[in-house]
Length: 127
Image (cartoon, rainbow, N blue to C red; front, side, top):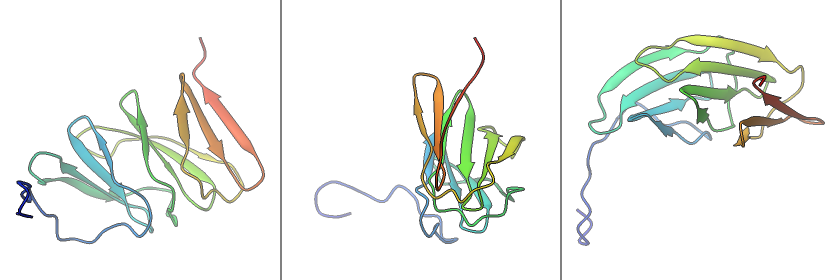
């Protein structure tokens, strides 16, 4: 405890991503390591749900974003990987944008914005 009423709920001892912020979504914490390893933990207990590797290896500096049961991971090599937010790693798609990608994608009004080194992409599901 810190003397102000806060207590440590749990601790996961197996490393922390260098740059990407872990993402909380649907009661789980998902994190991507610089090399493309993905770890998913139960948010309430810290129990390991799975630990696997994305097909786009990295490095990963951008943080994960989530929407509609999907997570989006952007590798510095310019690959945008979409995977399900479920109990196992289910790859949905990978798109090579053919350009360095360091920024965290942004979501607004049903549109995914991805900024590469020289371009800005906007992706939206068809109506």
